Structures are given as C-alpha cells and as structure tokens.
Length: 139
Image (cartoon, rainbow, N blue to C red; front, side, top):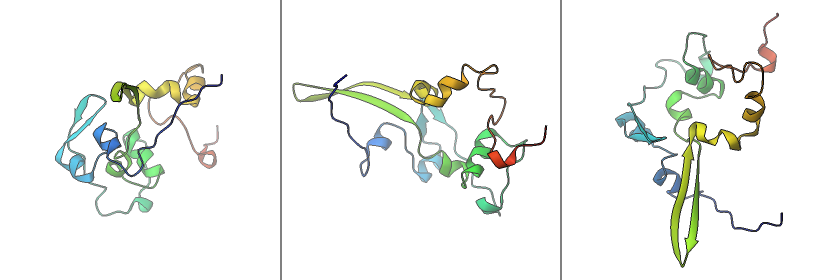
C-alpha cells in the first residue's frame, strides 16, 4: 500500500508509566494501579516461603496465578508491564493523543485470538485454555 509513517519506541522513557501500562512494585503494593480505566486493589505479596521455580500451579489457583508461574515469576511481577496501544497526531507542531486501548480492547491486534474466536468453543475461558505440548493428558 506504500504507506509511510514514523514508528517510535517507549524504551528508556516514562511513556509506559504515563499511559498506565507499566507500574512499579511500590504502586502495586500501595494499590495505586489504574489500568484499563479501573483502580486495582493492592497486589498480594509473592508466594511466601517458596521460589517461583519450586511452585507448581494447581487447578484451584486463579488463571493469572497459573500464567505467572508458567512464565517463571509471581503475579505482581507478571502484571507490572501490561498491554496497551496509543495513537497520536502531530498538527501544526502540537501532539494530540487521539486514542488508547488496553487489555481485551487489543484482541484485534493479536492474530491468534481471531482464530480462537472462530473455534467451536471460542476461547473456552473457564480457566487456562491452553496446555504445554509436553503436558497433555491421555484422553
């Protein structure tokens, strides 16, 4: 389509914090996290007495706890950096923030979700809806 426009990175800046997609441990601990237009309660402490590598998720655990453990971390660390997208326009030297979206508002940008939404059971989000290839049970 021969489109041409500049891309920018937030690396090394306060941008992600300014646009509420990155939070410090202190903000989480104090309950100062505003994400997706909602204020979150203070984050729980990491799993006491166990390292992340020693902890194995159980089916009774919340999905976010399972996901954090599968990536080798705890919930507060896993949720410190969140998805978001923003658009801006430069008009006569002034920058205007024209759009932001967070969480499920980004599904259209994540290709695999488009396929899952068309599957017989959709995303089947009653819990963790994917499994590691080496952890499939015998059916």
